[in-house]
Length: 240
Image 1 (cartoon, one colour):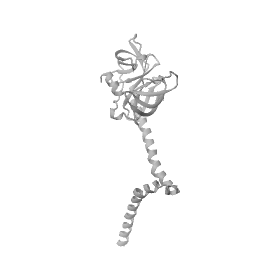
Image 2: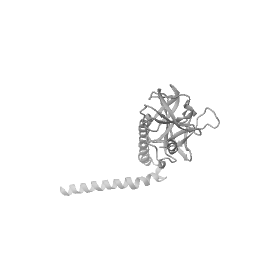
Image 3: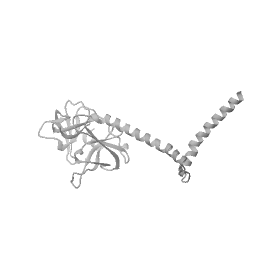
Image 4: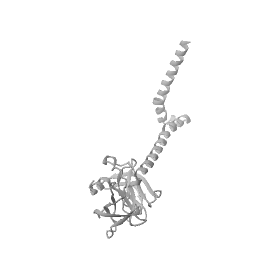
């Protein structure tokens, strides 16, 4: 009886080892062989080995984007000289330091609307070339997020543009793409309308990558390629 149990356990262990060798050694060989790959059973192995990890990657990526949006949403506001009218403003510090487009600010008045809330402000610095202005506001208690490290800003990295469409948090706009090239400006494959110029872009970790710069060279209403004024340029401009 003991011998039978021992024989059974030996066969069981050998079966596990054989299955492992088949999965690790033989399966990759079978699915990579052009001739064997024509058979139905090998095609099924390909689907099991290749498709499932891809599906898992897509699910994880979508979850990452969702979490990143939840993280950065409070950092971006609708800002303008009148209630309900304006563009993007990005919170650099929790004490009211904002960066936005210079064209959104009426320098003849001492107040602006941030998420439809009237607040006083003062201009700290202007960058006319990039249509940017650094302002200090009062009593907003805005959230912030970290700046992406330079090592993370490279070709192939996924980024997304975020813009509030109203003071209602449910009305927002998101456009996702990848970084194509890094020069003085970061080039992406995102196409967007000029109205989203100056809106922030983030990576899938919810870190600030920079502000959108949309230059439509033919001055048409068609979407144009989105470049990014890098986060490190914004940091230098703001003195952070």
